[in-house]
Amino acid sequence: MTRNRWWQNQLAESRLTLPVSVALFVGIRCLLLSAFDFATICWSLLCILTAAIMLQLNVEHQLLRVRSHLPESLFLLLSAILPCQESMLSPMMSALCLMAGIGLLMPCYQNRDPVMYVFHAFLFLGVGSLFVPFMLVVALFFYVCLALLMRAFSWRGFWAGVVGFLTPYWCWLMWEVCLGDVSRMLAYLSTQWQSMHADEAVLISLPHVRLLLVWLLMLFLSMVGIIHYMRKRYEDKIRTRMMLYVFVYVTVLLHVAFLLYPEQRPQLLAMMPVAVSPLVAHYWATIGGRVGLVILWVAFLGWLASLLHALGWL
Image (cartoon, rainbow, N blue to C red; front, side, top):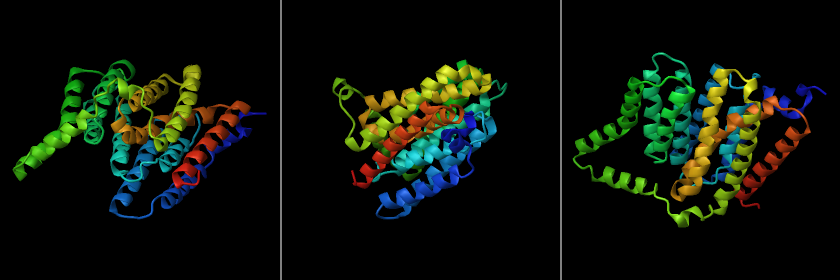
């Protein structure tokens, strides 16, 4: 039996995968949300925009060995079951900024003059840090990626990243100065950055059950994608390998942060599909055999269980 005859490979290469995923995303969110206000429309558009950036990234850099829309399809399906229904705008804005930052980091690979890409990548990370302070750690990790993976680190790029990250804060500060009162900005930032503190009690605390089910699904998919990629990474081109390493390391960072910072868990959980989806898509697009099919069905049952629990049917 050839690889292309396995169902998971046909799913990865089918042209219907993305349209069906979009329809499922819209239908599920219609079931989960009782009211359609301006914020609901905004975060739904942010989610679709994030998927569009992932699509462009996949097409431009050929992250998979086959032509597939599976990464953005998985992102939509995983985002559809996110349990943080009351305040989705902040989590989805965090996911969009992370995806935009990664998308702008990829063209830096062996680029002799990546300053503009670095500036705009860190600009999005700076915007994201207004919603989830952990984005500062992601920004520091981007410097490591520029030096070790992208091979594009320079002092000009370093200061471009610093300026880009601080630009949103500078613009907000100038706006508050024009209004004559910066206390609101200082109070908000103080509250946000206090959530970066973690003590021993936090380390042993479990997520709320609504977050726990989805996080366990993300953890399972992350382990599948990372283990498979670390075993098969040398079959990819060096450029593709370095790019997928970014998703591997960001996935690990997000899971560690999810355990350390409970106040930021809704935003971190919304960011996980950005990093996990390309790795899992790489697995199902390249693996054949019954093991891949079994993992596909286990993941589907986990996704279905999370959806039924979010709907209150489980």
